[in-house]
Length: 144
Image 1 (cartoon, rainbow, N blue to C red):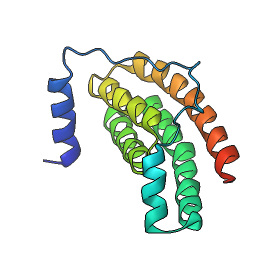
Image 2: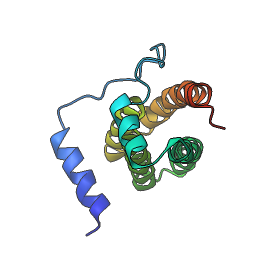
Image 3: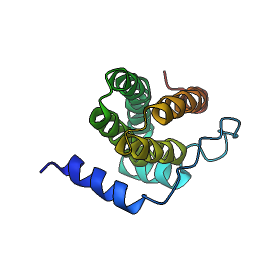
């Protein structure tokens, strides 16, 4: 038994009666994009160069994982959709970007339910949110 299989079952049974919330694409992303407490924790470990490096890696994740989710969706590979959403959820939690973390939780649920239409709809909304958050991170933290 794989950990992802167990997680998918847990999500399925816990959230069986819960309908995921859609992403609000008109939200103000400048408000608490990255948890300031998390930024402070990162700065305690290292310096500004560590933060810059972590944000650069995170921006790469924001590019790659949605592409992987799209590819998996085109192949009806719900396990891969779940796994890539889970990875992006972890990356977002580590850096303190709660909006993307929450969006990934919803994507995991749609993947668990094997709901192709909802995966597609949610991925479109996620990509809009990711674009806005990526732009905010680049402009606020001068990261390329």
